[in-house]
Length: 118
Image (tube, rainbow, N blue to C red; front, side, top):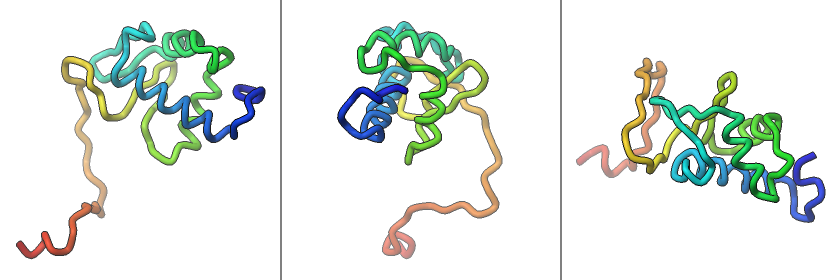
C-alpha cells in the first residue's frame, strides 16, 4: 500500500498527493512531462510516470488517485477513462475550453446579507 511505510497518517499523505497532482496539472506540466488537451485532460499514465519520479510516490497507481479523489474534501480533480484533469486554478498559458451546462434547479450564491439591499 502506498505510504504504508511512512510514520505520518495516511490522510496527510493523501493530501500531499492531491496538492502535488494539482501543482502538476495546473502549473508545472513540463516538470512532470505532461501534455494537456484543449479541455485540460492529461493521459493518466503520463501523470503516474511523472509522480513516480518522486520517492514519496514511487509506488503510486491509478487506485491511489481514485482514492485521493474519492476522499478529498475539495473536488479538485476528475478521472475519465485513461485521462485526468484539474477542475480549476490553472496558471498555464492559453485558455482551456469548458463545456456549458444547465445550472441546477436551486442554485446558491455566497452573498452577505448587507450586500443584498445595496
